[in-house]
Length: 449
Ligand code: F0G
Image (cartoon, rainbow, N blue to C red; front, top):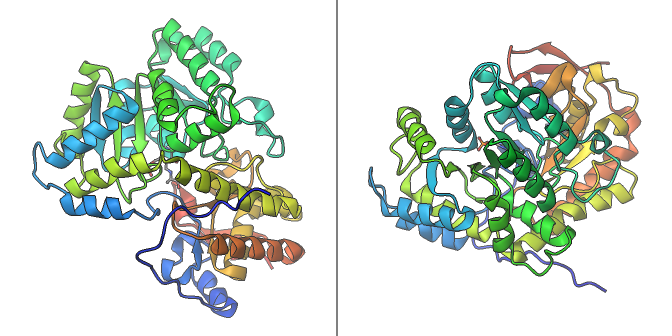
């Protein structure tokens, strides 16, 4: 028998959860027009809306917060942040930003022009939006066979090498950089293999195209490589991380994920000229290059959090607890995107609610049902978010880092099973009011009776 993998931490400070009733939640969700972004967090029992900025900081990080040096220029906290990032990722120039998308904005403003094409295994929405803001094209190159949510493969985040080569053959002069997102968030938190990163890097070098990594969940990706790829089981996570980034020319990072911090991000590069142009833009929007829109204390929390995210006991617990949730509901017959990802479980709401058509938002209907039954907040990644471009109707259960215990997860499993048993009673939704852009954040919906 394998020993239970326990949470490798003790709890020093707690935040109460208020437990409301199903009857109260009926009113709350109706008042929020069936949009969970409009529900107040005090009305949520388990919040799985995102794993971004929602992790619990360690006592070391809180100690770092007290050490924060708030000098405008050249602060000691920046020195510690700079050393930590350089040591882990190995790039020459490090530019702090207030979060991931600010790093993306600066990167694409500097390297991208109208009509350019930026290939990736799968761009995250903010990356795509920042590319499209430059009137360039964001291209996802996931192999078609990985689009089946039920197929199992250890590295479903890999880029399709054939598709990349075709794109380069046709449009070499329009490709200023290649991106790789580790792990692939929009496609289920699936990891990218080292061999795929190495091959993409080789092709990029052959054509003189820089390779940048969206590093948000770099430690989780490294753990999957250690677990699943030949030749890595004995390597320390730190060495695997160093190898991944040795193949790249730079990276963007949201420290709200594997930096286990509540805010922050950064941009790294080896290109001095680019770094200087990026810093000029940084001063315009984010702040002086030694704080980049963050407080000194935030830089301390990130410097420490990045290292803690690579701790093997932490990663063991982190990945095991996510897959525990996935496997338990999958064994019950509930369709999830397989295999379980690193930071989240994605329920296939199209398969869960076959009686609700795409036009009636099965993902949103399921997310509302989970809230009603158990006060669980999740997010729809489907037709409400992407309109007609949605390839799947998914509901993401994103797990905040070090925040919930196994009994919280067991509660989530129990609620999902109950909702599954009563799935025929769930009704579709229709939009009554929607904004022009990013409608999922503020659209108002109602139940179709
Ligand atoms: N890249 C990826 C892969 C992400 O998942 C995110 C954010 C970003 C970039 C942008 O970072 O939020 O710091 O500006 N993902 C969050 C989520 C919002 O819920 O998945 P940010």
